[in-house]
Amino acid sequence: MTPFLLAAAALVLAVLLLLLRPWWRPLRSKRRTTSADFSAQLNTTIHRDRLAELDRDRASGVLAAADYAEAREELQRQLLDDTAAIEHVAAPGGNTQRRHGIAVALALLLPASAVGLYALLGTPAALVAETARMQPGATEMEALVTQLAQKMEKNPDDPQGWVMLARSYKALGRWEEAERAFAHIPQIVAQDAALLADRAEVLAQHAGSFEGEPRALLAQALRLDANATQALLLSGVDAFENKRYAVAIGYWQRLLKVIEPGSENTKTIEAAIARARERLGQKVGAGDDPEVVQSKAPNAEKPASSAPSVDAKTLARNAVSGRVELAPALRAKAAPEATVFIFARAVNGPRMPLAVKRVTVADLPLDFSLDDSMAMQPGHGISSAAELRIEVRVSKSGQAMPGAGDLTGASAPVRPGAKGVRVVIDTAGN
Image (cartoon, rainbow, N blue to C red; front, side, top):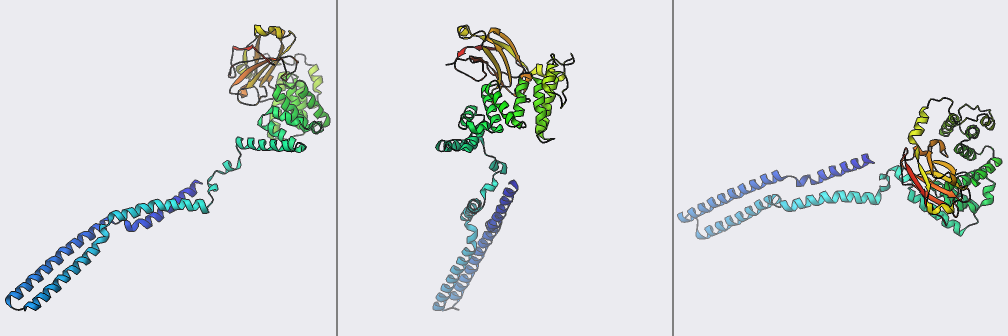
C-alpha cells in the first residue's frame, strides 16, 4: 500500500500549492506598497502647488473672495478622495499577518480533512498487509478454542464437537486437555483409525513414550485400517525409538505406498528410512520382511564399516551427556527394579521428548548420553532444539506416563552438545 500513500500525499501537496499561491506574493506586495507611497507623495505635492496658485490668484485680485473659498474647498475634497484611493490600493500588501494565518490554516486543515474523509468514505482496512489480515494470531486461535470448549460444556452430546476440540488442543500442544476431550467419545475413537492414532500421539506426547496404551492404540488403528497413514508413521517412530530399525523401515515403506509420490512427506519418510538403514547396518528391500531381517542381524546396531561416518560425527557433536543420581533421602522410596526414564525435552516446544533412555534404579548413579538416534520422531532430535532440559522420572508403575508416587528430577537448560550435565532425582510425587 506504499504507492497508494505516496500518490495520495502528492495529490494533497499539489492542491495545497494551488490554493496557497495567492498568499505567496511577498515581493509583489512590497513593490505595490512602495508605488503607493510614491503616489501619495506626488499627489500631495501637486495639491500643494495648486493651493499656492490659488493663493497667488487671490492676492493679485484675479479671484474674488467667494470664488477663492469655493476653489480651495474643492481642492481639499479632491486631496482627501485621492488619499483614500491610494490607501485602498496599498491595503492588500499591508495585512501580511492575517494572510499568513489563512495560509497556515489551509496547510493544516486540508491534509486533516483528506485523512478524515478517507477514514469515513474509503477503505482503511485495505492499508493493512493482506497476510496480517488473513492469518489469525495465536491469541485468536486460543480464543476460538476456548469458545468451542464452552460450547461443548453446554452441549456435551455432540461427538463431532469433541473431535474438533480434541484435535484443536492437540494442534496447540495442550496434551492433557486433548486427552480429556478424547475421553468423552471413547466409542467414536475406537471405531476410527485416524482418531486412534491421534489419541495415541496425544498420550505419547504427554507421557514422553509410546510405551503401554499409545502402542496398543496404534496396533488397534492398524487392525482397523492397514494403510492408516498416521498410525504407520507413529508405529515406525515407536520402533525407531526402541532401536527396532528393521521394523521401523517396514512401517515406513508401507507408508510410502499410500502417500503422494514426490511430496515433502515422501522425502521426509525416505530420509527416515535411510537413517534407520544406517543404524541397522544393511539395506532392506521393499519386499523383505522387517522382522526376519532384524532377526538375522544380531549386530545390526553397529555400522558395517568401522570408519565413523559424517552422520556419526554429527551425533557425537550434538549428544548431551552427564550423570543421573538418586538423592539419598529418596532411596528408601525407590525399588531397585523400578524403571527410570531419562528424557531430553525442548525448553520451548512440544512435550514430545527429543531423546529417551530407559534404565532401572539399580543402575544409578548412571553416566548417560543422549543423541539424535534416540529421537521419537526423525528430524526432531536433540540437534533440532536451541535449548533443552534433561528430565528423569522413576516410574512406580513401570509406564512412561506419569503416575502417583513417581520420583523426578531435572537439569537446568542446556544446549545440544553439552557435557557434564548433572541431574539429581530429588522430588517425590503425591
